[in-house]
View 1 (spheres, rainbow, N blue to C red):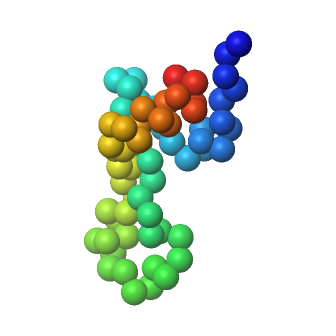
View 2 (view 1 turned 30 degrees about the vertical axis):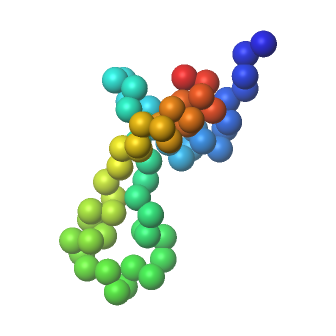
Length: 63
């Protein structure tokens, strides 16, 4: 039987066409006034996950 997709993970991670797994960076929800504009801009970027973690996420996403 096929495993169900973890819906919470579909909202947190994105799998690219080439199979890489991307996630949001941490530190962009609060305490932003002390961070510089450059820092906040860089926090908006998606970050690629390491291979072992990406493998786990893909399994849970059913990819």
